[in-house]
Image 1 (cartoon, rainbow, N blue to C red):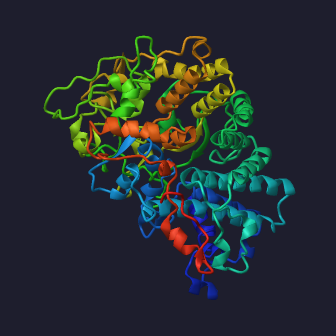
Image 2: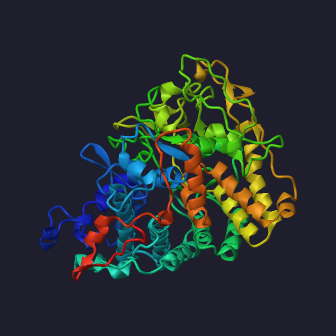
Image 3: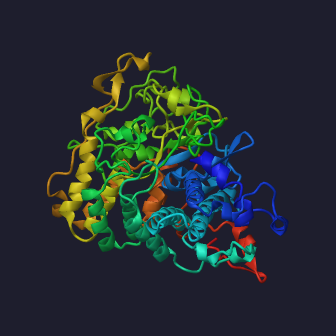
Amino acid sequence: MKSIYQLSFGMMVCVLLGSCGKSFLKRTPQSSLEESALTNKRGVNNLLIGVYGALDGQDFKDGDMTNLSGGSGYAVSPDNWIYGSVCGGDAHKGSDPGDAPAVLQIATFVGNPSNGFFNDKWRVNYEGIRRSNFVLHVLANVTDMTEQEKTELAAEAKFLRAHFYFDLKKMFDNVPWISEEDVSYSKLDVDQFKIPNDKDIWPLIEADFKFAAEHLNEVQDVVGRANSWAAKAYLAKAYLYQKKYSDAMPIFEDVIANGVTSKGLKYELRPKFHDNFDAFTENNSEALFSIQYSANDGSGGTGNANQGEMLNYPYNGPFSCCGFYQPSQDLVNSYRTDAGGLPYLDDFNNHPVKNDMNVPDSVAFTPDAGNLDPRLDWTVGRRGIPFLDWGNHPGVAWVRNQQSAGPYAAIKNVYMQATQDKYYDGNGWAPGNAINYVLIRFADVLLMAAECQAQVGSLDIAEQHVNAVRERAANPVGWVKKYIDPDNPMDGVTDEPAANYKISPYPDGTFSAKGKDYAIKAIRFERKLELAMEGHRFFDLVRWGIAQTELNRYFTYEQTITTDIAGAVFAPKNVRFPIPQRQIDLSVKGGQPTLKQNSGY
């Protein structure tokens, strides 16, 4: 997709979208395409591919990988590992404290409007929006397509535009809406982009997703393209974020009962949890919409690989970079289960999982022997437990700075050794891989539906959805197993679980017997377990209205273990990130900025 985008869209973006300097607008650029050259079926489809190409926020220029705003790819990773997971208490920044200090500022909520990462994230999302708008603008004048074809293509462009706006909305809240109708492509006046951020854009996001849900095909000819069911799920998610539970619930239930993937596969949970994080088994029955990545594809670099997670591999060992994104002890403790296989919803940190802090790799260490949810070891790399097929995690030898960020490593973003020749890309200065990022997966839909059902009082149905997720986790076929020979992990695994895994569904009627508050607490905790390290946690805490309480509790506990977040405090203003100061400065019109800063910054 990206190679086509670079050929067609890239040659004209400066001309038609005003992304270059003002002086450039006063003359006709050389080697550019006129808009008329793209006002046809082939041209507008290539432009749409360019919108898909913006989903990962990455670009490849002059032999190096950058993000679409010119900064580092990890700053704008579409999985929001920084903004959603590190800020949500799933993980520490990792590495050394002085390595990428801008991330640590964000993680401890002292990031100010001048932090360049916020500006990068803003610019990358608006680049996707500009591309979507230009597709819609060109499409209006295309004559060699049927009206149905044009409507379907418009639905894709609006789905993607709504995605970019959704990301901006949940991060910054107060953002300006710019549509294809707000821009004059014949008169490139920069002031036309200076639109105030004083209106709620949720209704406009809803409208785009509704249009996409009504007009997209159910099955697509290319697996990476959005279908009508993905649009329905995203629409319901938009309702959920606004607490419109009665509106969201029937849509989620329709998706659960009748939805299919873009390949026509009925949505269902895979027996193996890790199938969602393995390039060999991706685009499966759980993937509603994924950002597609490729490795070793002949592009000459890693621009088409998953580079948002380029820093997030264990330090040293078989990986070239970089020791970031280390799961928190608070997260690890959440996977402790009681004698009945259920989580400790309130006091999980009173049942801590044993770690190897301050234990040299020359000293023997025995992993925790207590009851654990098996999803832990597909989410967190910990000493003495198989780390995919790379061998048992050795402890401090794979950690850059234990004192700063703890003893653990991320797993969900790591490629398999067995298939690294196909799915690992070493053409850049940090690893790339072909593991897709699933923006919405079926387990997420089940848990969002459970949340809606609980909120409207249907506690038995909510329990069924939660238990479907837990029953998949309880299937031993999907558990991490011990190696046949730990010194030769490629020889395979035994049938023996790698730890004392014990997980059970909630007994029938538990939610009804214990009431709505308990059910909602259990659903929220299940999201923490199932979706950990996938960029959701912070945004969940904010929409639930418990971010300040939960994150200050997290800081108080986690500071007893690591030093990186010492003194961190979450304040009421931190429920949204600051509007980038650079964007406020650029928005000046008539001597006054049109963008207003979020309260408290």
